Image (tube, helix red, strand yellow):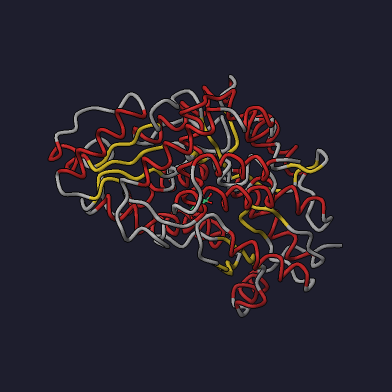
Length: 413
Ligand code: BGC
């Protein structure tokens, strides 16, 4: 018969060396200030439950380096407890048969009912829950420094792509960097998400980038998308190449630049620098994309673990991620909307409230579209082929017509 733990046994357990406590090894790429602040909430939450947190950061927005690191760990038969992952990468790991099954936890905690179908699509493999979604980010945002805009004589929110370009021109003429951009393929693809959505609307975006309809890809709309990418290219500074996304956010935060086109993790950087939405900075949807959300959801994929103690700690981690109170606290800091629709927007700032509203509207209609840049529209290999075309065009190595042709080849299944 099981005996209740005595005070002595409890004291002994508390005195165990750290290595003997149940722990979780979490691999992620949240290394920027705002990201680390958000992740710190999860870490302390688990540590309060007596679960040791073994942090495995692999820097690189977009997560490419992190994905290489996971592969090495899993192939050597030693997977981490949980790995931050995006879109089609999650489904790929599901197919490898190395992930845990979280169905009973999901059923007990009602995940099915609270997570939108578009997000669940990436949390489940053959119907089974394999990942815990922590947020819904979207890429079609613009972040602006209000003081810079004022000094450049830009009033209000640009209502169209052309108005945005005109506003950025004014910012440049006033002596600022117009658009702070980080010249890395995934960041160019983030801009492409917005420009494609704005130029062709939800129907075009879906047909071209999710369904790979050759007619949509080869249409004049795609040509126009590239023309517009080239207009944006004219408005970035000469040192953009290789710049990290958070360094670009820093240029807007410090008043060196007017705008950044970036997903809503950028807001985490503004908040972390003590800036206030509405007063110091503005957030708005990329002109022409209101009602649509090019979304990406960070999920923690749970790998199958043989050790019972580790597996138990893993389930506590999954449960902690899905807890509504945690989702509220985390996403207020991270800049995203919660992955659960039953989390009230209380305590979120205006940008956060807008993110939640926009996701609800898009998810209820036709406007919730997977981000091309962040692997929610196509498999990783097609995504990389798109990156290649978009980046070469952005860097002047392909003209618009050639870019359309190469994109069509990249998307031909
Ligand atoms: C992730 C975000 C992260 C961003 C920059 C994206 O891929 O989804 O959570 O903040 O990369 O690191």
